[in-house]
Image (cartoon, rainbow, N blue to C red; front, side, top):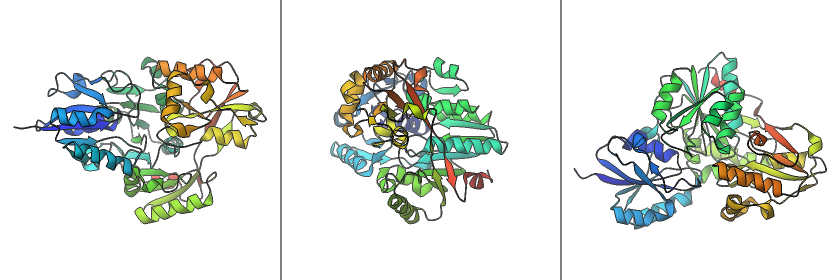
Length: 436
């Protein structure tokens, strides 16, 4: 039997999931390679044989996406599977054109072929873009379910940046678990707030295995989505965040538009800080694409521990990394807090940037006078620390969801910015979760 030869384009997340749930045990397909982008140091590795299965005793090589055209031609590839998220529709079609010109079919895989069915109720929290406020919405959902007497387990969209075999199925219930698994800043940003609330978090690579483990200790599973990807599990309630700060993006990004069209509930977040015109525009998008969805208005008010560390100070603002990079935001909670509480100046960190942080500014020049909290590994965390310590400022304003001082030794005062979702009026998340 001639096997259909496949390359899966990804970023160490959905690509591995699509392989696991669809290709791994199918003899009619041969996945000859993964390609990788967005995440540093993923390419040049191998998807390990322990995860790849009996059809792939040597594992599957992972190459830089830049080599896609040559890989198609050299390996006689029949199909290219696009399997990552938070990219413009036009970008996806450019990749399709590249694959097709090299001689391969181009394919997107949807819910029917990639979603797993749980024995327990699933509430999925997703978004149309990175940085919309999904994390605080997920926390609000978990708090609401706990008040309803439910045992909640969160399953986070994958962020496997280390040893893939060891990260197949990870359980986080304490800070020690994060230390033991050598979690990156990006992972800690998502796990810490749940752990602080006493909620167990699962993540990793093999989501069939993860789901079955989570089911053993949950009344309700909350899918904590990443980027703007669609859920890996079939949701009983699918909540999707939409951003009035970036009106129109809900119709222009993949697979954010898919999420919006699938949603049972749409949360318009950040109404308190968005322009009214942006709010009006996203309401029109909801009406056009998913008029049957329940719409919840939300705000994400800002809180800081000590306003005096910001007022009349020259501040360096550190924001969530992915929100600024492929999320394309030019500000976040840190900037909003700095302006709200009277900072004298936002210090430009670019002249102080070193090594991988300097490379990040070259790759994402739109970031401007903010410092993305990049930390995909120990070296990058050290680069971030050195950049902050080199900066000439009075205070570091930390707009990420974690306590950055636990991972770095800063030589100047810092203040954390916190933000939680608040529903405005009716309906509320509690209203839509009552039937779960």
